[in-house]
Image 1: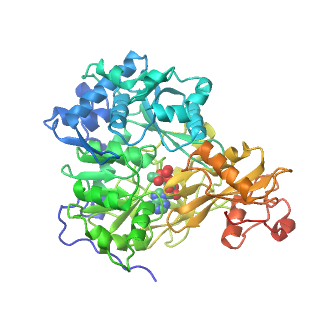
Image 2: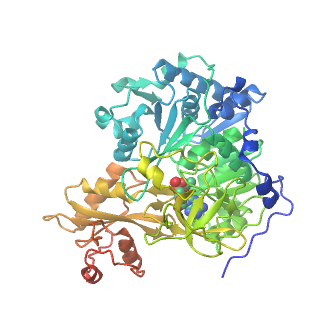
Image 3: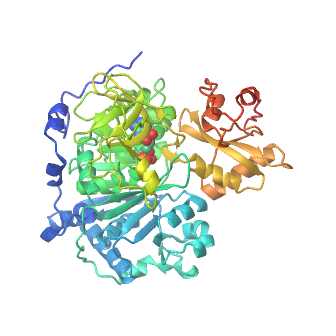
Length: 610
Ligand code: 6R9
């Protein structure tokens, strides 16, 4: 039974940015959209930091509040656009003084703090490249990404440095400087105190000429196999950040905007930092962790008007306020400032859309995009009806298609050509026509995987979808083995590799096991080496080992022992089959199994977690 359409608000409080979908699609052009940004003075190009801070600071909005940072202790610090322009100028000078210039990579390993904004924008002003890492990553993912990204500068805290980087500093060949935010640099050899460097730097900086095609951001993402992929983004992406925040988040300059994503992931960078600052709004930054009461309090006290969050977070809130039970918690807060709610990162179940309408008074608008697309591609819009469960329709300027799948589950490519499915309701791989400004420009140092992402004139997303007769897109699943857990993209290969570092592990296969709140949890099937016992103690040891190496966002939550992992004839663990068995689903085509009969009849010794 499909969920009833939620009709658009007949009397919206704020006139939506997108009022007539068809008309806007027909008249839109990226060339015209570029005109919404200013460009560097004197025709010297396009730089994200100029558009995000300097132009506001220079046009009478220097005293407007750019950031409202809520500390872990609930203290609130405000930073104006003028202050942010000056602090980012100082950081650009700091980099320059250290000999860091155009194209050099600056990596952040920081929580959600005001300094992060200074570092991001200062790096962009200096035309260096910013690469954010998630502070909850363990030492392995941090080391790997810093190596692959040729990190020249790391900005972090003393604690994170000590726990995640110091032990392998010597192996980070390109790393020249480690800058410490806050206290503690004095006790750490080979680091510099950021505060002291900033204090000595000038607070005005002339941004050098910047080509829209200069690399600006490097975002690591995961594939099915191999090391993480560094998606390269350029300054021109700002055009798409601006446009998408306008269409899909309905941002207006007087909004107070809160994006709950961590800036170590693409959502937290594109919509936690860049897009809202381009629009000159006030950005709420919460240094603390998720807590239902805290979140409602922030929405209420900060008078948040536009809120961008994730399905996992909404499901956690729904748990504390079941639809069938009392709505006491949210109703004890004044959420009257809130006027638009959207989510991203994983499928948004229709119950969550409707829960938003009932409890917050506003339905949740699903949006779809990826690290590679850089900005929102498909969305439910403020001025349009919502079909609960659908990701919505492509943004004006975005051309999407559904491609016929081949045997491997991905889009079928024959002689470099693909087949676009025009019939509604048919499942296929979602593809996008290259040309939008925030499209990634390839994976760093990885030409083969960059090339494999495109075929027949389309970018292949790796997601399976259906399009209905009215042009709305419905998410079906991933065409590959990557796992979305609590909105974070986890590469199974990265987890398998970490487990292999443990002396007890002969082999492993990692899958996502569906979970009602997190979407999926990471589950590992492990074959033990001779002499190790499939016991609770071994399992606990492995779980702790993986958590120490990978960090809590990536490490498996469950481990099962299996001495007979299914393999393809070429010797690869068949994750698809592990998943089918775990879920009790049909095993599908097992013709590539190394020994089909033995695999089908083999019994898995799967123990439940202790
Ligand atoms: C922004 C971000 C991208 C993958 C994407 C898809 C999944 C994102 C979704 C969604 C269903 C949505 N995804 N939005 N699935 N409905 N509205 O999340 O980037 O971390 O690169 O992940 O997330 O599978 O391909 P990223």
